[in-house]
Length: 186
Image (cartoon, rainbow, N blue to C red; front, side, top):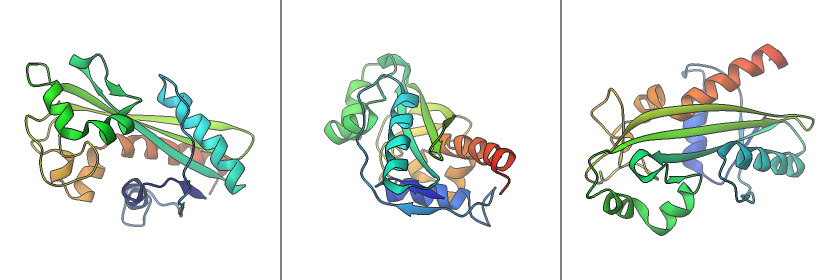
């Protein structure tokens, strides 16, 4: 099976989750293919469009992952547009948008979409937390500013194993793996 993404960080997290030392085991290879991203207000719609495109290009079982950071006091912004917002505003821009906000609650959401050609199945994971007041110097994407609940460190301060115990991506991957075993009998 192939995981299709240009993001090595996502692949490394997923590979760790699916390794012999992770919580579940499944062999996955990384196909670095840039996929078109449709404009939609739904992570699920974006992930389904990507996985259909990935299957057309690869021709075998594939899965993709799309995620977003949804900040409560910004009415869910940046949400589905997280990648674009990160590229244009970055973590500094998010911190600036929240400088006069007392509510710093946010949710990181992940959607895994799988396809074997005939179907596209999705699995959703989320992690609730807070946006920190400052940017930590480690991690990728919004990890340097997102603090998962029940922790005192942002994702960027955690090692891979620690992050993978509480991440939105873990939840989606575990659901996907459970479904795959029940339906594909690996």
